[in-house]
Length: 293
Image (cartoon, rainbow, N blue to C red; front, side, top):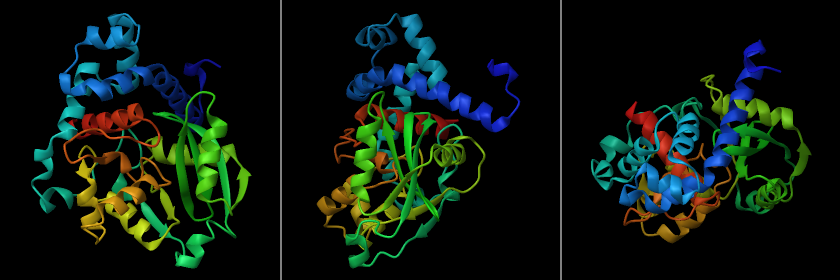
């Protein structure tokens, strides 16, 4: 069906998300390279050569996905990484959350529905809980959504041909849950999170009390900004437990919406990310672009 003949707004939005997901996969190699070289302020020619594309073709596809040129995108990453932006302290960190990534629901619209999280219940890893899961397009490639009765419990990403591995990864987080395939539910959640509707995205946080404190602390980092592991540990009430905070950040089941991608090393480096360093750079860059307007 031709895109200009699609009358249903929800279908049209999903088609647009499919286009962005496809462009992300085309640009993933470039994003990994930019994540490793942004500090050198690479030229368009350098970036295009690194991924085996002509400068014209690279610029066209990248700009269609990001909405800005590669040069502007790299500058946005540099701005997001600037530690000076965090030195303002609470006046910045307690500011109202900014709008998200070119259309996703704003973080200040998130509603957190916390499940019972006693140590015993946390150890049961989802026992007695039905999770509907499925795949749907996002601006950062194919997303794997795990939907609980009260809201979104998990969001991961699957590269091309990696869908089974992405499901296995999410299943390991809640192995005792009853998993039911439901791509329609995943599509509805993708529209809520990335379709620009502006409604709240309910989040169900299932984990130990300390993990949940860390995940909530991540929400203090405004879109387009970054924080260190030590700062997140402090906000979670354990300023000396930065290693434990790092483990909790790595265990975050709801990527992007619980913004673990905004945590960087103390020296400002883009450290590893469970869903890929290129995707982390993409998220930070898009947020910084959105924040700069």
